[in-house]
Image 1 (cartoon, rainbow, N blue to C red):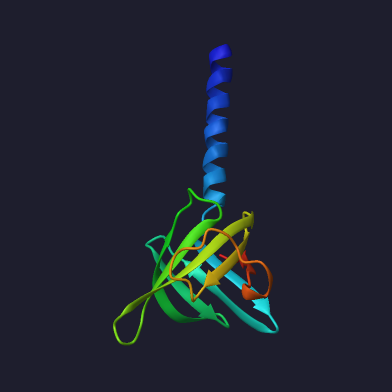
Image 2: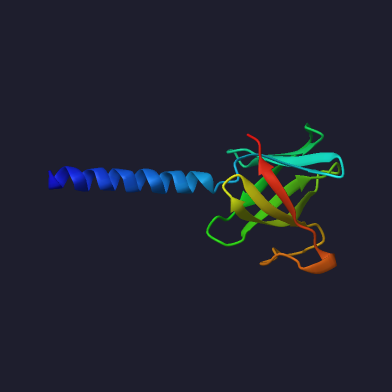
Amino acid sequence: MKKQIIIFTMLFALNFLHAQGKANTIIGKWMATENGQTAGIEFLKNGKAKLLTSGKETQTCDYTADYKKAPIPVSLIIERKDGKKMTIYGLIKFITPNSIKWEIFPMAETQPKAFSEGATGKSVVLKRVK
């Protein structure tokens, strides 16, 4: 009986840890509406991201995310029309498993480590829809 309780406890703990890891992934569709405009991003498992405006895909790019750091550094690698690649750095922080605080730094030359404060930076809260 004692052995069964230990096995049950271990299975429960492993299931809980698996659910926790799954909840804190950026994979999925994230949207926000501000001033009547809807925009967002869909992160795919294959390292691709789709930028969305009014629910329509406007551009696809590659991305990287480092879940070992907090906030999570995210880089969007966009290929321009002239064939050159450009990296846009960002940060993500989970507010809940289905909402994130996201800020991009379009002028940064290196990955920022913290969110901006004040008028220079603007973070947005995105909700998971898929």
